[in-house]
Image 1 (cartoon, rainbow, N blue to C red):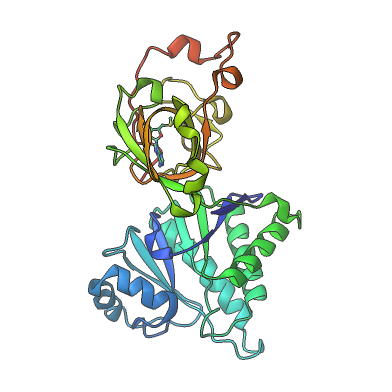
Image 2: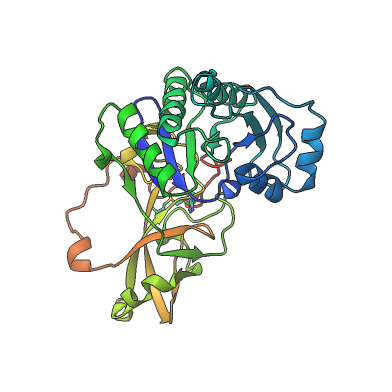
Length: 341
Ligand SMILES: C[S@@+](CC[C@H](N)C(=O)[O-])C[C@H]1O[C@@H](n2cnc3c(N)ncnc32)[C@H](O)[C@@H]1O
């Protein structure tokens, strides 16, 4: 995932399959009959199942530059917004304004339906032929402008299918942030995935030290297994993970262990601008590409970004102060579900 906090909210550029995103709304690049098409629209219809087309056909089509909403059917998203982008005719037929309208009206409709997270494809950039660099500037510009005056939408994912789209979106995002500096954008590729008994936030241990020996595994992807050699000599490892089900980000948060709001960076809450988790777990065994671990506090399916050996000499300190946690640390040790949908 590539992400950069914009001046106004959190816009993330994501490479991959929009149909798999667990967001409130995914937007599709529809045709004016709302009859399902090729490209991203076809993929969304395939993943959503026949009920989506049936619902679409009852909507009476949609004008270019406008949007209509349906349910998500078999998708993880709650709703699909069908945005009809313009076909590119050279730029003289109001194409830019029509494209901007698709993004703006999608966000307006998403807000009306109570959405907090929205994912967009690059509308009009497939067979409709809109030049990608200009389309990305319009997309990012409209989204950033909208977020400047809206507090409800917490995350907007711009989903790039292909390297050219991604790089256009990255440049547009860097410019919108007023930096023009692509160094603000960081890309990580998961090296593996956690398998654990926990499928929802509620009830998941709050930290490894309070996980009552819960066991799981880390499946390391084949490209990275060579990096596991010599790790078997360590009793504990540090897992750095992308807390992928954390959809909300806040700078003040009432931590699960407390009753008062605290600065996010003085907590270990998952609702972070970059939702990175750090878990020190016991390493039980390594078999090929699979690490057996104990004291897991991560949801099943959590992408792993990095693994490091835990080294007492490096990571343990004797003179530790633990701030507000000192007063509350005996309270509770299982999570709630405030930061998920
Ligand atoms: C408080 S966080 C601590 C994670 C890590 N030990 C840390 O300090 O960064 C642990 C909680 O995050 C939530 N969580 C675990 N895996 C997650 C995931 N993949 N996405 C979102 N939230 C997750 C669960 O509610 C769990 O109780």
